[in-house]
Length: 331
Figure 1: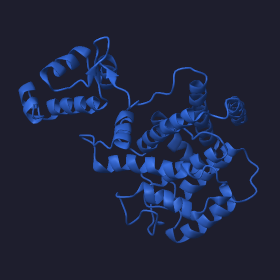
Figure 2: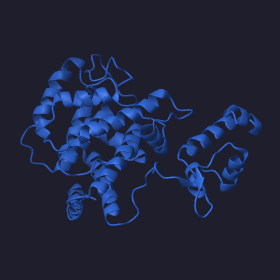
Figure 3: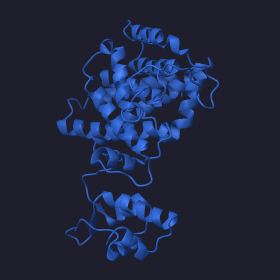
Figure 4: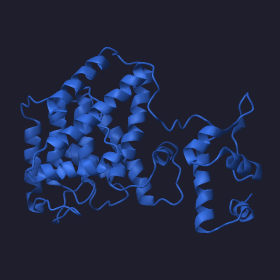
């Protein structure tokens, strides 16, 4: 599909979305919370973070730690969610109000507690992207290039808002102003620009990672940005579809639904275990149901997902028996 057709689809879906405005406070709160987790999960996954969508939600919304995952990965989740909260406060501003400090603040949040020496600080060393032939700018040029980016962003741009946001992201990551966190910061800049024009954030899925990275490299090497625009426009359309489905009463976006208890079948689907195994572990005391439903079904808190993952990890890595697992969990 040609790019102009994708932009036409974006406009058509935006019009359909506008027909539902003003949004109810409940819908706005729900969709913002969903994007907060979904973007945190996908953006970090693109960079190699191994937290699942469910684990990301548990870390961000419940403050839980996930066994077998590094502290850095869990900090990346918390920090990205906080950075999303930060840009959400700027949605009522114009792009002319986005300053270098805005981007430095976003980056400072992203690397908080992970690399405080480089958080919110332009890089002072040359860098190369692993597996790429793209040459990044000399660190001595970073400040001037970022000023040029701001001048361009504050200029009289007449392009489609989706194109402006996509260009801002591409220009930012091509400058590569930071030692680390450029991709996440660049996507948050793009999402901020989209949300300022009443478009939803661009939902670039984990499975789109290779196509997304290759399309950026192709544009940076002067081979054209068509594939890159296609990835970004498609990601925006995907987000619009999620919002429209929710507004039109269809199935809501897949959500961790952390405030809801899980029936045994839902817990089995979330973990890949059989209901028989979960019933057995519950009987043996390795799992604890939160309560029984009126129909007599076991209901589990979302934390049971992490407990099941820990049981399987201990069985696989330490070969613990059922009796040993009971001792480990101090049952």
